[in-house]
Image 1 (cartoon, rainbow over the protein chains, first blue to last red):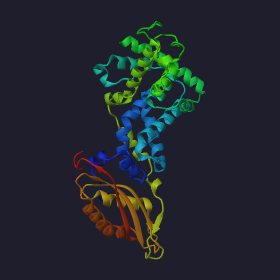
Image 2 (image 1 turned 180 degrees about the vertical axis):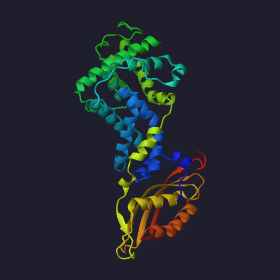
Image 3 (image 1 turned 135 degrees about the vertical axis):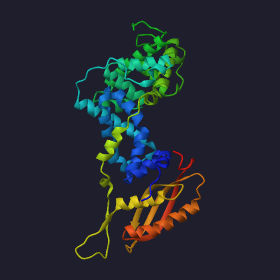
Image 4 (image 1 turned 90 degrees about the vertical axis):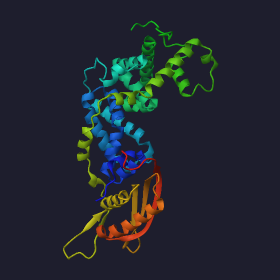
Amino acid sequence: MFDASPGALAQASDALLVDRAADGDGRAFAVLLRRHAPVLRAYVNRLTRRPSETDDVLQEVAIAAWQALPGLENPEHVKAWLFRIAERQAFALLRRQPQHVELDEEIPTRGDEEDRSDARHAIRAALTRLPEQQAQVWVLREVGGLSYAGIAEQLGVPESTVRGALAQARKKLLDTMGGAR
Amino acid sequence: MTDAPVSGVPAADDFDGHTLEELAEYLDRGRYPVDPSIESSPACRIALAGLQRLREIAGPLLQQEADAAARDDRWIDEVLGRISLESRAGRRFPFPDVPVGTEAVVTEGALRGLVRAIGDSIPGVLTGRVRFEPDESGTRLDLAVDVTVFYGTSIQSASAAFRERIALLLPRHAPFAVGALDLRVRDVLERGPEQP
């Protein structure tokens, strides 16, 4: 049978890949996953702080996405949609396995030594040192773009808790950034 | 780190009568409508600058972490083994005129795959969404197919090739001849298909 060359699919828009995956094309789905996997991985790492569990979470994300793709109304917004699924699966993991040893060191990345931005580096390190909930709230708000209500729902806490944690996180990060100047 | 202000950002959660949350929401609104009690306060303006800087760091944070991390996509191969392509099988179309006691059907999902592959086989074409419906006689299939074409592809020749190939191949794999074929070009890609 005829096949689109892998290079051709890699150049296709998200919307086209979504349409094909929704029609049952597993190869298009794989291209879509490969395209967004690195950022989804970074997001899940930031939310769960459990890099060793991230592959499992990403697999759950992919399976949930595959099942729900035919109902996706705006295929061009698939990245944001995948982020929402990643949030749900990340917190599902945390609910399944609540016990957790806090990581002391920053999430390892290869490029740290090349990171020329002191402020950026300081923020990443500070984010890792923040209490888990404060870091989650900040990441969901500033990186994920969720509303207070959306964050509250995701974390299963009142909105007032979200507001308090976000204020704490912002204050600490601002202090950190001041120190990095 | 101590609690003392390091860069002029006050440690207390009070910025001339405003909270950090208020300032963040003010920033969310694009500092509009202008609030003079905020804009005239040096403490507020320093905090706003800090929040703005924080936001500029937050935006590309994941992409930078993604770029810096070692790429490991083995989980994708695993997941592809776990998802069921059968979940998209859809309707079943039986072939008439098969020997008694024999059943031969083709699924909607398999037919979509066939149409997709036919489109992909035409140089410069990538098939998108495929929809079809048997006509009233039940012998012909009316098709609506979205395609993306690469820049420079002649849409007329591509359409003609699509029609020719599908008219030839569909009856071999399905109990239908081709009825109406509605080909919609949804997107034009800039580079050639053989340049990954």
